[in-house]
Image (cartoon, rainbow, N blue to C red; front, side, top):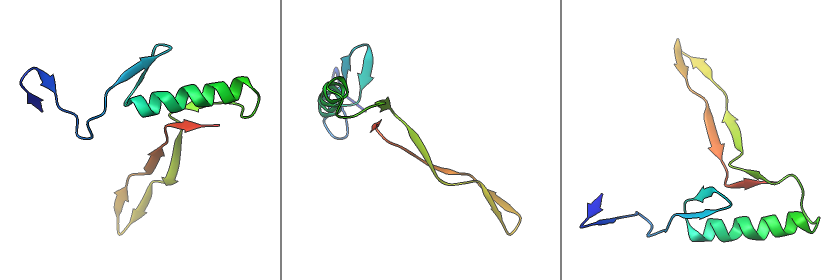
Length: 77
C-alpha cells in the first residue's frame, strides 16, 4: 500500500542490506551481524540464512491431496 511517496510497511520495518544480503528489518540485519560474529569466534558453526523445515508432508485424505506445510526460519546454525 502506498501512502504518498513512501511505501507503507505493516510492521513499520525498514529493509536493510548487509554484505549484499537483503533483510526485512534492521533488527534481523543486526541479529545476522551478531551471529556472524559468533561464528567467527567459533561459538556457533554452519550459519545458514533462511533454512526451511518441512512440518507436514504432502498427504491424501478422502481422495483430496493436501500440500505440504513448510516453516522458513530467519537463521539456522
